[in-house]
Image (tube, rainbow, N blue to C red):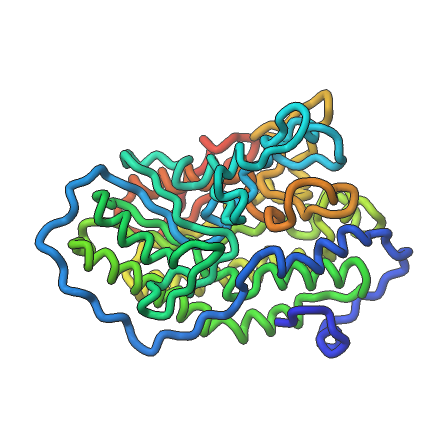
Length: 412
């Protein structure tokens, strides 16, 4: 996958002819160029040559309070939980969408706590907090920008991120102090360079007038084996930590989840492909062809690969690829709030738009293209439903016109 829009990379993309005038999308383009930098640590994890050795287990499982724990990247840390839908413009609380608005300024720590400063962005509506699993403690160890190596134990190649120890090492402490019943993992998207894909596709929409999906697909295909090996090793590391704390695999459940598509198919975009509104108002600057590829090819491909890892490692799989159907950024089934009609779980978008264009002063770039406040609550509901089903793999979907209570599972 190309990390920038070099001439050699552009030559491999399908040409996109257009007669429309150039778009004044400089601010949004700057956002697109910065996106891979904003999501830190997009190195590809090296495949594990062998599963890590398992330390001798103590005699008993810790008798502390029950706990549900999440590990991984921004799609489970709670990134974008600051936002109730999207509203173009720069004034005040952005038509009620900005939960960090104090009435006179903005304080992201109201949503992300201390992790607003580090950029891990663990929000107060993160999946582990939105879910109802009966756990006495709900512990979010995930961090925005994490790759698989940020989950591994330091002793086995793990890397710290944003001033924090590798997540498996943090889990070791949690596992000794709590009786962990559920561990949910979201990882692999940054190993595949997900933000690079978004950045490249936005650049191709704004300046190159060409499709990105051919070169992006080649990049995904090239990185997939190493990325999935990293996900597998992350699961091995979690298993090793739990065994070292005295747990048998039957003492807790391990769930691996996939990623939803934050943008709809081209036919489901409410803004026209040409002109300014798709980029500067909607925050969804993608050609229809690239949107179709992302929604119906890339996201399902990643989900299928993650499902294979889950099956090989004995983890339960939660497929989120269709979770945002009809609730994506710029979807025709949603609308942006106005001053007279505020945000709503039934009408607002459930994913954060790309900050840029007219919206360039809103929030931080790394929040873009993640489930927002409503989306986080929906994913939490998915996990709640999965908790009631101790075996089997499931896909989670929403019910049109309903809030998170309308989420439902289908057997995969």
